[in-house]
Length: 104
Image (cartoon, rainbow, N blue to C red):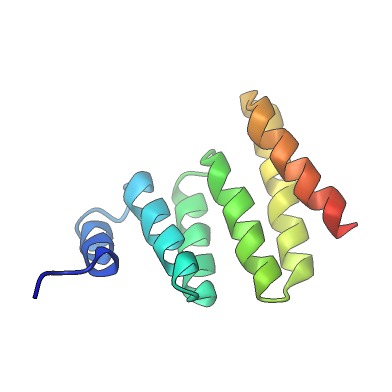
């Protein structure tokens, strides 16, 4: 039997830990499979090496919310808003702001 998508992504990240696209894909795969703690770890690892990867703030915040970690989600969204303001990513900024507004 061949490798599944999760195993392929884990291998890609192992071969090149600083590849943002592979790490983001692994985080998303963990989130989609319900492994939210592992997803959060991967989003945080991604952002440690590439703090401008805007989508990771939104999806990382969503994972924190699903885990019931609302304060962590709020901080993730706020960090993303700061980054997207600096980088001029208005679309992701508006998504992050909307997510933060929903949290109150």
